[in-house]
Image 1 (cartoon, rainbow, N blue to C red):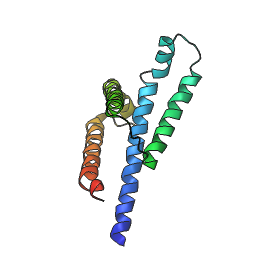
Image 2 (spheres, helix red, strand yellow):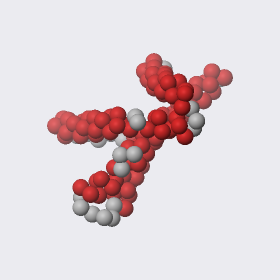
Image 3 (spheres, rainbow, N blue to C red):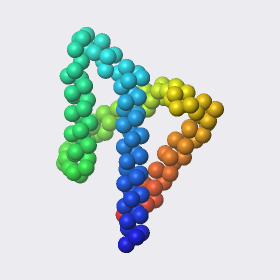
Image 4 (cartoon, one colour):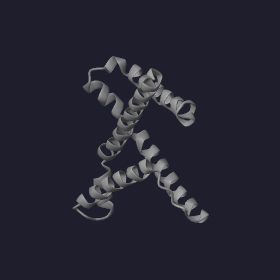
Length: 142
C-alpha cells in the first residue's frame, strides 16, 4: 500500500516535471525565437491573434486526445503521412531548441548561478536521463 502510494507520488512528480520541461521548451520556442511574429511576417499580416488561438487550441485538443487514448483507424498511407508530419515537427522543434540553448547563460545570470552553470546543465541532463529510464524501465511495465 505504501509502495503504491510512493509509486503514484513519483509518477505525479515525474509527470509534473515533464510538463514543466515541455512547457518551458514551448515558451522558449515562442519567445526567444519570436516564432509567432516571424510567422506573421511570413503570412504578411500584422494581426496574429488567430495564430495564438490556433496554437493554444491545437495544444489543448491534442493533449485531450492523448489523455483519452483515442485511436484513429486510418489507412496505412495516411498513418505514414501523419507520421511524416510528426517527424518533421519534432525535427524542426529540436533544431529550434538547439538555438535556444543560449538561453542557459542568461537564465544562470538572472538567478545568480553564473559560476554554477555546469551543474545546472548537468542537472538538466541527468533529469532527462532519469526520466527516460523511469519511462522505459518502470512506467511501460505498469
